[in-house]
Image (cartoon, rainbow, N blue to C red; front, side, top):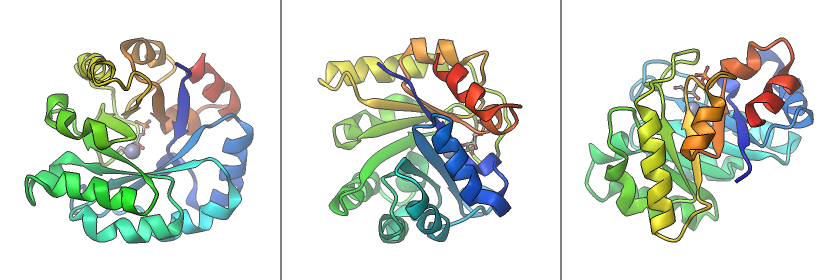
Length: 221
Ligand code: DX5
Ligand code: ZN
């Protein structure tokens, strides 16, 4: 499978976001990963739908909205209207509301014609989201605890990637997008891809690199 790179704009300079989006497009990025944080599900507050709405006219790249928020169902409309191409929601945020909330939220996302995905934190077994794999366009395995860029990849997640890919194959979705988020570097990208992930989020590995284009190409190669 070809590897797709999703630079996380969390690590970008918000004051020059428009230029950055165009630069990412020219540098071979495949998705723009938008980390939405609410100050409750995770400590920081980043941005909401307005950021996605402003970026939307600047690029044809897939806008990947990673919602690290409580009560995600109440916010789907805003991100769909803003122009997100895919919206991912956290298993933990949904599970604390009810056993059916994750499935309901994924179906709500789809009802807007937007792709959907479920996210698990490093301490949540990937098996917990197996029941919703058939509904998901992508699954996102966190390889750090969400909230901050620049953390270290938690190596135990490597086994979860293998399990997720094996299960996707088992249900007849061998090409399903499996995204990894947190601590992806030029040093571990090859191992992450070999384990079965095909979408790599990269914040610091892209934005702290001297040459963004070279970093994206190396993450793919
Ligand atoms: C963490 C975010 C990540 C983060 C990745 O909560 O979901 O997308 O920006 O940053 P790096 O690649 O620096 O770990
Ligand atoms: Zn993210």
